[in-house]
Image (cartoon, rainbow, N blue to C red; front, side):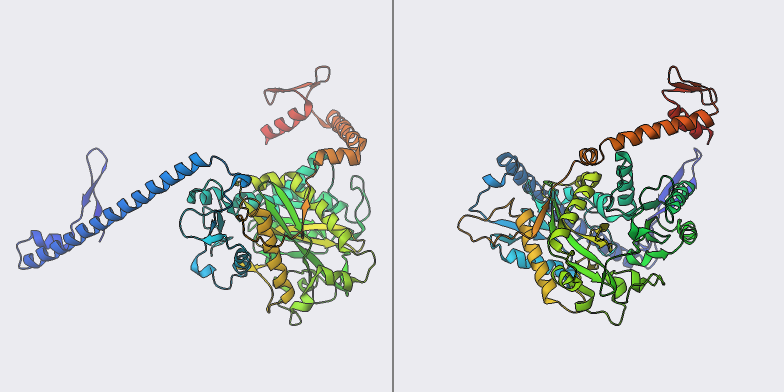
Length: 558
């Protein structure tokens, strides 16, 4: 029963709340024969309440004592070790790790299996369930798709430990979405950065962002302008790569992964789809690579793996694999099974199997049969793409709210044109995994890929954990591995100036002249050119230049 019920309205207009009596208390207050039974039931209820209060008080005291103990240990640890320095670590001591996974996450977790194999090579790391862990390993996400600890806040993990420094496989979820995981945010960031530099990334297919909270008319206008450059070269289009000529667009939604991907061979159809579905999701429309490099007549893309640490350091693993479509490539049809190499799509094909659907880099080079296709020459191109990708603000976005011990292994997809141009497709927070938990090896276990990920996880700990927690004296460390290639970050503005030189400045001057000419011709308000100040009586404001006046006054009118 509800113990409280709303009573009448008091003369002052306030609602009076009165306690409603339970059946036992009402029977005990009456003079009926049920009085004795009511008194007994009331006594029993009272005794249970008192017992429950005693238990809760005891538990509260235990929790308070444990909290005080942890605070004292944390304070002492802070006083003795104000900062983490691996060179000054006690090499005779052991370290502890904590696997923070729910029970259902332990089953068939291939990611955890590879981690435990790597930890077995480090007997100086001991498991713990207490608060003194040095290394934390947790889930990517829970069953609902959100991270368990405050949607992936690394600070929450650090606060759980009594140590000042904790190595953890975690960056902040919001930072990962902005820098890696959300196609719309990543595309928006790359487009804005390229626009500021006045350059076009040659590894990034032209992409138009459609946000369901944005101005649809402005977004459609940008898409229509891009469509003008699809066929014959026109003014302002620049050089359209040979591999992307035509009106074919690939449209990807923010949610639902490969299920949301659509292909269109003309701009009006793509535009109509975006108009009809903008309310359900945010989308990107990307120029489709119509002339990709083929393997035995079939389309493929390459999955590589990138390790990012909070130092910050970025590594590209030299080994990966190609995801190959089962059906022969053709532009006569837009069948998803022909054009999409995602495992989710290809597994539905009856002919799919591990040997033909996944080809490692070494075998890919052999099967390609081209003298100019060598992974030793392609990997540096991938390194340059990743360097520019992270330099374009994505590394800063990723490191927001991170801790000094954060690291993570991402998956990144590349595609090649028939001219061997390398294109960046996307980066994944949970690459090739079932349920966000473990690497997907396929319907059956492939020894090569199992060995690949074992070696990858071993070297990941060497790069991200052993550098902070070196092996104790007298112990035998694992054999050093060197399959992760370090990616050097470039200064994009400096690189752009070096590459384009005066062309960038000339473009800026030409753009200013075009804007000034348009303003003189179309701007209906009076412009004082001798002082470079524009005054608009309708807006009631004074601006330093005509561009500010035009934009601001237009906003006022709208």
